[in-house]
Image (cartoon, rainbow, N blue to C red; front, side, top):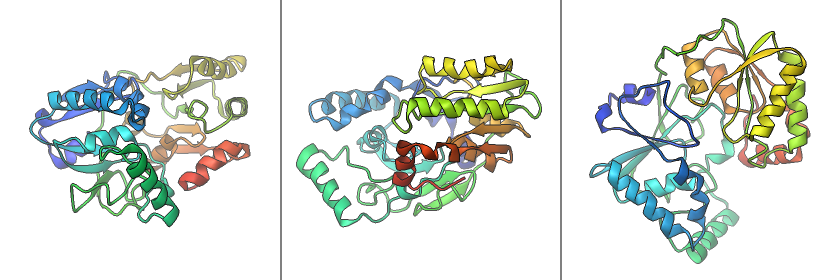
Length: 313
């Protein structure tokens, strides 16, 4: 919405693609919205030579239906193969980067590949996949692949987020939204992550640190934001940590994007580990307690931080 306001784009010419079962009950953007959760959840098929064509045909059919004669793609990055499939659609003429969360992935903004990385890309793209629609991604940016344009634009709430990307960054402002729920003044908001489901931390280790987080920061009343990738069992376990302390809470539904809550309120205390939402909250002036260091005892988590070059909070 901030990008639309900044560029003054006619909303009748805009299509929002939603994934991960997010709904749009809070914001009425005034433009067409399409839930692509089913397609995005199957994006791994795009890496399979036997299944790629079938899913590409479904994606192309959808885009042919919702897009006009041409379109510009705004996406968080192009390491995700689903975004690659959209970018390489015949109707796409240009792409731009938009901020998602607030975490800075230093090594993900790859501008120069090493010889070994180039060799792996060659083997994957030329000798195995045999397609120009999908490529092996070592980062969000690969100049050889983003070949439909000479100039690259990005949109974020600060220059920090895309500081490693060779783009012209534009500062945007999130619109204020009248929310259907009243967030209490100076409320504590706990943000939990999909690290376990995504293989970035061991389950028992993560839940132990979640309990420690609740024990240290829980107030008489709290808000909880779970990640869509978290299992119901994991969410129930975390809620039990509040119950044992006699702490009341309200779970913020996925129909309420936390980014909008953060942009439309002030003075919140946001608590969590390595979620990008903590960085986003900090940039918007909220009080943030980031206990990322508690996860440093996990080999999986440290591999994740090193692999992507995550800037410390």
